[in-house]
Length: 178
Image (tube, rainbow, N blue to C red; front, side):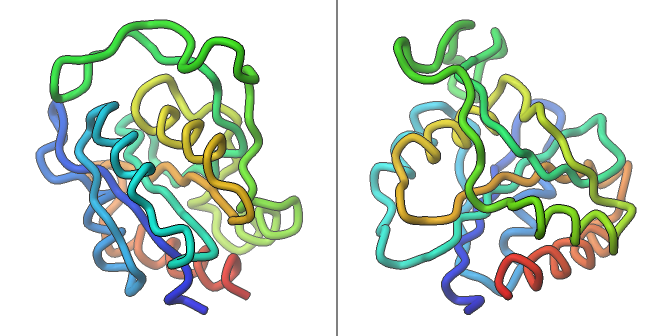
């Protein structure tokens, strides 16, 4: 079943020269893609996805201030004022007329509680932020039906080593692929 899980990470941006989300996606042992930290790149990636090639989409992004991994339950219809790496972006709704909140389809009460019970480095979050992580999560939930879609924020390498984060990610993958 692991070949039916697609994992994405983001490339470098701002002070993040080596994005742990990209490192973890590549090292996961699953099909993966690394996406440029740009709104148009996120849209382009989603528009070209082969929906027949996966059953689960787990998107990873770094939350530099966090010292833990965060299972993101929801994506919000909102972009903050931070510009992407192409200097594009404006604060406001992602899409006028769309729901204000979309619930992820990968995380269930059962699997999320199982994950946090076995790993104190993983927590539940209801705020995916207002930058590219939230944006791609919202867009993926809007446009991908019949698949399980979720987002996981990872920590910066300064807050938690890649090796420790990989141990947590492998356990998470075991649970969602069961």
